[in-house]
Length: 207
Image (cartoon, rainbow, N blue to C red; front, side, top):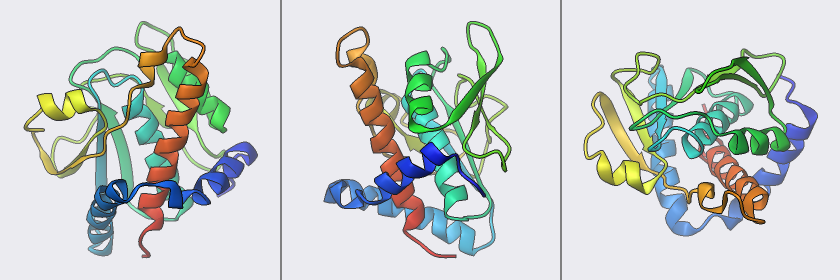
């Protein structure tokens, strides 16, 4: 698989900064990694649904990076999804930050809730991204892991129906900086943090 050059550079940078991940974060990331590893070693399909309240920023960024990391490390049978407790739209600021990191993103359908194709390589099918509730029929309905990427969704969804495992991997919301001089830097920071941690997860076991 040939990654886009800019994205490959970004991945190399992030791989070299795993030691910046705090110990308490590594603990939950290792638990997530163990779940994936055990499923893969048993020859089972691994469905991962990343959940945030509006399915507009952190959950999409996590879905995209997790799928990319799985492909990068050659981990088979990984399918990544995202959803929210309500649907809004994939935020254009997040789209911009992901493009800046090296992903190729094309708008497939234009609407109040656009559908995007996200590419990390011309050798692979794109990741289709649009905002949806986590229980949408597009997503797996059972035998999936729910990864809670924001505190609101984690606290307000005591039960994620159909999930066989749940991991609270929360990220600060870059939305807090929308319209400020720090907006671009904070979106870049969140894209890098999520990328670093998803790469760490999939680098953490062998098949």
